[in-house]
Amino acid sequence: MYYFVERMTEADIEQVQVIERASFSTPWSANTYRHELRNPAMSRYIVARASPTLPPPRYERPAPRRSIFAALIPALFGHTTPPSSTYPIVGYGGVWLSVDEGHITTIAVAPDYRGRGIGELLLNGLIDQAIDMHADVLTLEVRVSNVVAQQLYLKYGFRPAGTRPRYYTDNGEDALIMWTDPIRNPAYQEQLRQLRERLFARLREEAGEPAATRNATPPA
Ligand SMILES: CC(C)(COP(=O)(O)OP(=O)(O)OC[C@H]1O[C@@H](n2cnc3c(N)ncnc32)[C@H](O)[C@@H]1OP(=O)(O)O)[C@@H](O)C(=O)NCCC(=O)NCCS
Image (cartoon, rainbow, N blue to C red; front, top):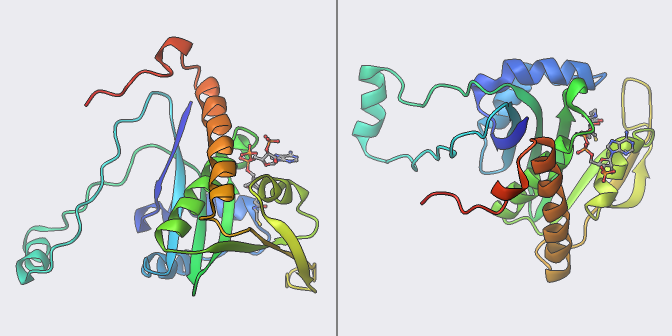
């Protein structure tokens, strides 16, 4: 199976909610996701999709034109956004920008797909989104009992920096606060490069891609 990430859209919320309910004891509602997706300057959400074959090149939507006709044409002839992807969603994550800090707000992988590198792929996607929003550092809160997620964050340079007592309302559990070093520093970038190299090798392996095609240059 091939896994890839792309930006979450409102059409994805239904599938995201299934994974959300399987992953968290206090799941976010569909409305919360809708609200988050409508503020792309400060909040970015991505999904990981699974494909049995190499997915086609990603379609990047052109920047919206600002002329009045750009708003009129969809109103007259129906919406012009491409149809939602047919590749099923197997995980998702989000990051908020607060001044120069990127806050990882959520990350989850469907239970049947855990342990295959998808959480790591998503975290990489969130780091890219944070860099795109000009964040300098990353931070997050994680349940003190959630050792699996903490291991993932430690691997990507997050370090514990205190707790928020009784942060989680469902069981009064403490949150561990974690921070990275500045993410655009050469040292962090080099760490990221090495981690990505290993992750991509692992994902290619899991996709069963023959070694001969691994370094093939994609067609122009
Ligand atoms: C946390 C979560 C997103 C990880 O996703 P995943 O796809 O299973 O993780 P990956 O396969 O990409 O593993 C990446 C790293 O996570 C850590 N990890 C993953 N599974 C682990 C396990 N069972 N035990 C310990 N560490 C584990 C390891 O550091 C691993 O790196 P490694 O393979 O080099 O050891 C996933 O377990 C999940 O959705 N959990 C429920 C939701 C949640 O708790 N989200 C975090 C909220 S703060």
